[in-house]
Length: 220
Image 1 (cartoon, helix red, strand yellow):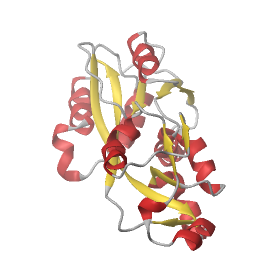
Image 2: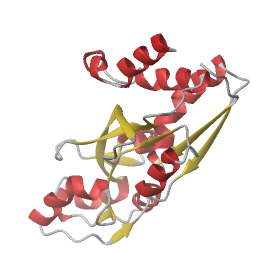
Image 3: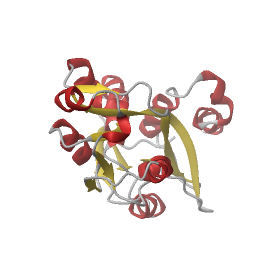
């Protein structure tokens, strides 16, 4: 493998930064001489274009992508959490569908996951945002219930600032790696991707990024 001391990553969502954080700590300890440049992409076409043009070594996204020149591998599944500020919970109690809701805008992958539930209950959000961090802040400010990745709100839940609706419908979202089929994988990129591949359960590794990297390493 060739050696490059810079890794360039495109993030298709702000939440991906949380997924990446623990892995980056490990990577920094192992390859402290390597610099990691991260760019947040406003939408999935930007992430795809960055991988295709070699602007990014890879991208971490939560949208499904079908392109003849790209490979996509699932790496981690995040549970979605229905949560609300404790002060609002004290006012409304367990009656979930009576609450005001703060949601991501229509067309987003999160909204696509739970949109039918809100249509069924004839719920219209009091606020809509294009960014999950903005939804989180609105929920923390007591505007309503949010449906957010657990990793994004786990500290607020542990602190008791937010309350989770444990009887709400179980939802999840999958994060995946986008790679160019013809990309030359440098040693640092290989190491980082191997660490990301370890996030997947053992039972899924045979058909995952982990298996692809094992093959790549043998060929390299």
